[in-house]
Length: 139
Image (cartoon, rainbow, N blue to C red):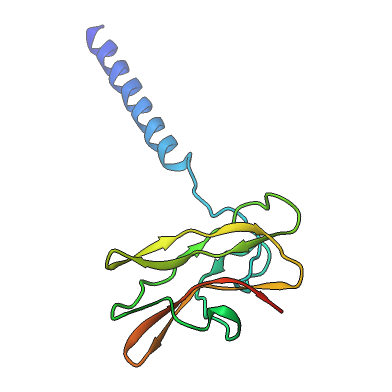
């Protein structure tokens, strides 16, 4: 009888362990949130790859920063749900401070009639990297 009891106990413990292992492996599936389009040319429902190139014209023609270190590969941001009608997604970008690059996350802003968003971006010129700040420019 003691052998039967210990055998049942071992089988029950094994069943619990297997159940916990299977449950922990299948319970959580991480999937990207369905985002919304922004200025970066992404289709609605698709993440926007943030490879911003500054657009000529307006007060943002002059580089804000010139450095010798290339910015890291751009992030792909998953755009959150629209917080209000008419919101425009402004994608994140690599900034420069304290001798290194840092990520500035994207955000929503209200659209401005008669203006378009000129994105932040980095351009390589003459072996150096030039940062152009983003901002609203008259169309």
